[in-house]
Image (cartoon, rainbow, N blue to C red; front, side, top):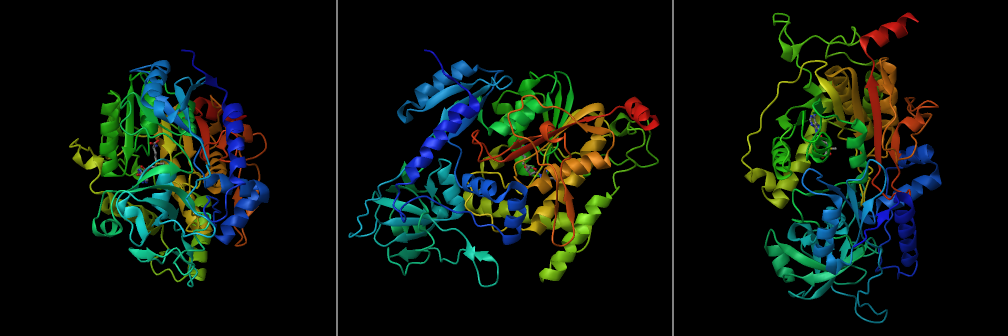
Length: 583
Ligand SMILES: C[S@@+](CC[C@H](N)C(=O)[O-])C[C@H]1O[C@@H](n2cnc3c(N)ncnc32)[C@H](O)[C@@H]1O
């Protein structure tokens, strides 16, 4: 059988454009045509950065999933051709179109084409009764758009008298502005939908129908039990094949820019690599395979359960060069007491010619953002818990993530990581200059992830907190990499404050760093310039000449990826630094 190889932008791009045309004929109410609502200040910041039209295209693209699934093949176990054969057999009934990526350096990537948006016949006649329906939470809907089913915890409301086996339309309730200036869903779980205009969220869910399916339990069952399949989706706005339990260990479903980020690091056999924010381990395992499982990858994450997940993934993929640790990456540099033996290799001296003095050094740029951010917080909001010292930034950040984690745990039960039993080692940190390469795939605002139906919770302040956090992590990365080594920094956000502004901070703060070309390079250029905020803070981005050295993945571009950013830095050696400073 001859297998097709896709040219990236050409094939994916034309496919996506054709699908847009289908949308024009959708009846208004029972269609999928969402508009993202942004915080007003953020909208103006992004409109300025991208231009209003580009930003509106990006915003629209974020509401849809990519029109294809991207698979990274574990080339230590199998080949892309063998995977294509197996997937063709497994996914046959989906008539999926499966193909190899033909970009040099991405020959381990296989695409499986999906389709959409599709017009769905919900059985509604203008003069007839509205269809029976199930209203789901936004998070549930975002998962369904990616190919998941509707599970009980995601169901918010349902029509009266729905019985098991009945066909139901599935719509989503997206957060709406509240009277207090915040956002909320304001719907009681278990509400009976009448199909009339007096229903809660009746108007608001117009244009927010994501498909239909068979109820797997009656209406009363959906609100009586706490888990289980509520609706089996038979007709979806977007068709993307499910890879659950398919070719485990041989393939890994991963966004294309993430695969590119691991490649850009250019790991070599036998090297010692640090992956600073590693869970769930997508890029860690990609790096291990590129190193042919020879060398050492130290994969750290601050979450115990997620570190167990890395253990499990590495075992599933048959990789032994990965050592996972639980560690706060903000404390990744091992702090040495004066009394300690300086010959101890685990805590050796730094090798950066004195550029890096100690792990507590604060950068003036970070302090500037902090002070403006907190002035605003104090002036504009009565944030009792918004504290004015740097420790609190971290703890408030952490607690938000922990709250989300706890909610997920409650919804989904203990999760697969809990039953692994793998021992999670804690690390006390690593000696300065002890890694050849460092990947900092930083926690971020995730404003590039797709599909996304709501962004209103992010504000200028919250984005600045992300930026502060990332700069502190970067400070650690710089200390851990050896002279002549490499740092790759990546995020999955479209926010220049977490991308280009981090690069500016890095280059201005650490004169021995420089941007390096990346291979492969399929993303677009970075943003050059600056932005002056109304509160007086100026955010500096790239300078002319630097834009082609980073990769910015625009979700509205023909590549149809998530929004993503990659910068690669090389660390000057002592000799080079000395020469530079004397010339
Ligand atoms: C963008 S995800 C990383 C994805 C991962 N690199 C991959 O490709 O699979 C960010 C990760 O950072 C972790 N994280 C957040 N703050 C951290 C910290 N202070 N120290 C270590 N890990 C942290 C989160 O638990 C999360 O798993």
